[in-house]
Image (tube, rainbow, N blue to C red; front, side):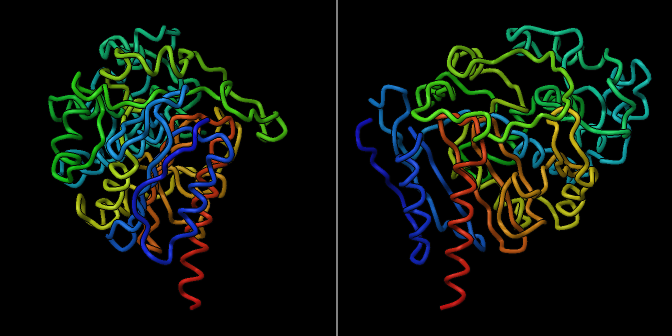
Length: 381
């Protein structure tokens, strides 16, 4: 790999985070960006490396990359905005907004149940192919027609892709527009945040190519990855290849709210900072959206313990975000991206990249730990 150029800004005192970011290229990093707000101020805005596997195109400050399930954090913010505007109630049954959802005895499932992955609609039944993800009506009809895989609220399991169609259909029924349009109108437009659900043709040239873990310079063993041996529910979700599927024009232009937001790190961090500091909703709505419902039980899809909120956020649970505050909330994505807010320290943090890692938290955990160590050192001097 050619020597990567690392560019951007780090507030004095936080230089160790810059060093940690730069050192990622001694491992598997190809291209990435990192942004951190603290007390409402952008204190770190870094980018570097390359947008392609051949390392021939440099990463720019406006390079977009698919952030996979970090998309769910932005979607959760959008739904909280509906609550703020009096258009959505987490306690209400889903059928109040989407009547067809009540088929197969699902009429008592609430919005909070759906957003906290407790509906039992964790995968597509029957199975669908990737191209069906680009047809909103096909995907949502599949979900509404299903019987739950378990009694709702008796457990929870990660709804990797179906969650986004459920959330997006709530918005479509309430607002009469797509979730991507609503995010632009209510969040990213006013904030001038470079975050997109459904790209325009003119924006596609800014996208970085994703690189699968099998093409990383270092491939972790199962022991190094810490693969769980816990029983997991079998998923019928389409298998999405990072380059063939997720870098296709069809994927980039579609709206798959759980998985295909394209953004810069600064763009995502800007959204979390605004939500954290009540620039989008009131304190009471933030508190409601981040209230824990799953109590750290084992996720039946992922096979590990996790904490989820009624509004769709993951709550800090050690291997999700690191950092010292149990009240941190946000979402991580396949391969290593993450966006979160830490209310105790008034921090909004986002890291995105194009080289996927089979141990997702490995790189961002180093960055998070470096940030909090620098803050601790700062308070001791």
